[in-house]
Length: 114
Image (tube, rainbow, N blue to C red; front, side, top):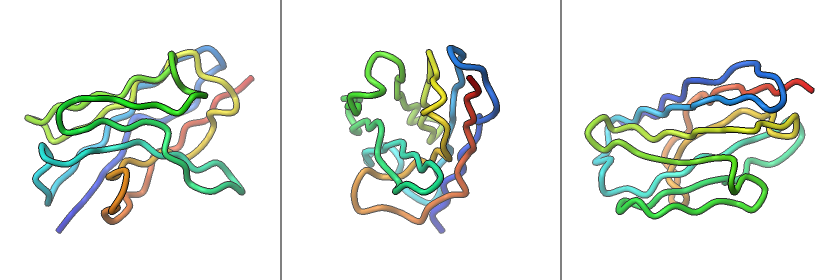
């Protein structure tokens, strides 16, 4: 059974940092591209960062230079380091494959106060 478990969210002031983690089980993690998505209230879920199985990363423009995605295949875990957080980064964050999605986890809430 595939399971994605996100953690690391919380309440932070603008300009602060958080590191999100996503532990995957039930898949051969190392061969899968992975991504971080977010969904703000009233908005659609959107992909903000992705990483290929070889480690190539890609970001949407509004997080470039602030967010860093990484992976540890030995731990079946993908990370999202978020720096210089802004109130508009407030959302529930999820990990999943960028396409051909697996079942969604519960997500982790990130709240950035101004």
